[in-house]
Image 1: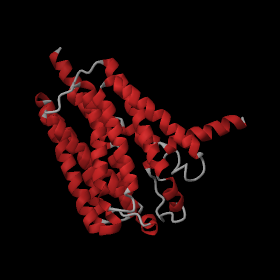
Image 2 (image 1 turned 135 degrees about the vertical axis):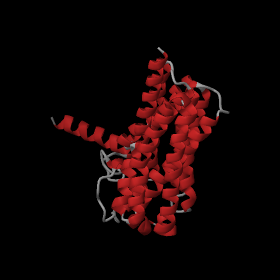
Image 3 (image 1 turned 90 degrees about the vertical axis):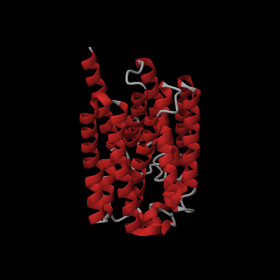
Image 4 (image 1 turned 180 degrees about the vertical axis):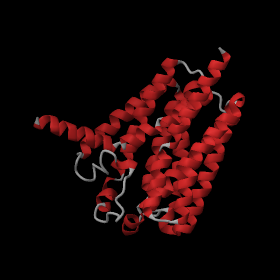
Length: 312
């Protein structure tokens, strides 16, 4: 029984180390890319894409905590006063920094998952393997810039867009289609406004003590609010535009559905944050925005199924 308890604790710690809930939700992004590239993707290729993305996201999120382990240990000396629900912390917050995982175990976990993602990604396409490698390098650069510049938030938009492109290039080698560039804009603005800045907003108390330079720490709530809401507005409009370009035969219902979930997941909590710039409202936006790509995937999959039914 003690062995099972210890094993369960390690599994939970590894899940928290990889931010498992967030990593699993993130898989929706490349799957959306796959559907936009090919609305009837081969089942085998789609399943392989799913495995690559799961391994890749679990590895990248864990690598972030592995690189930041020293900073995160310092972070626990200045815990934020706000301790509400954080979707990133399902399974535990920074388990490596808290000593729930050894550095060797953490490094091995990242290495195994990262290698698996690269090998399987290469089976999909050499472009997919390159995208994975570049995204990992940019994530490392983001961590290295923690105390250097608040402009690192731009890197997160690029990293997330590259992750979505993995699904696209798993299905096609075409890179000159307007829908691909709109898809990248959509993902980048969603990440910047829905996850990065607002997540830092909730951590201002800790980051000030640690010397971490983020948009809320350096420029305050007014600039953070403008960047956040502006990004969310662009993401909402771009999401509706994706439906119009990708499936013109289902333009109006698809656009309406995307606008509805964009307003619910992004704009409504965004307005609430502008009115009351409290950490709790920032985290509420972060949690709801994290569900947005998964909801968009449901909408797009429904449109694909509807179109298939109309053509039968």
